[in-house]
Image (cartoon, rainbow, N blue to C red):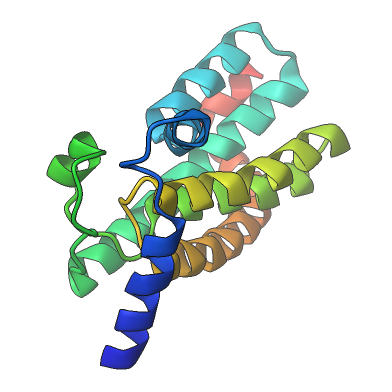
Length: 181
């Protein structure tokens, strides 16, 4: 296991741009933050307020998917307790959540891509499938995760995206907020 962790740290270091000024670093910062749950929460709220019934349903399903993914990821992080890679960037993430395995951002964006595919429209799913791996890579590039963190996070997120797509209709059948659609 030690050999794998060393290899993981070397790969992650090669992808790192957190200390290198320039356009690549700025793009990685934007992408790394674009997977934040508060950002998606605000987006879903806007869709809820201004969207039609179909988009309101999608927004609710996304919030549901984010919630179940977050609970699962935090539970795993609590058990594993792998420290984040050393670094200065991302102090907010480092102080609020000092554990890196698995990546919550990678799990969230993979869940969103799978859920976006299940709920459509196709253009939305396509955008999410292009964006999701870029966010995961940006988390490594900015030094807040290792490659294995985002890889496992993405796999978990894909599983939870499928689960959310399956469970959302069942949950919403009994959830009073869906009456507002």
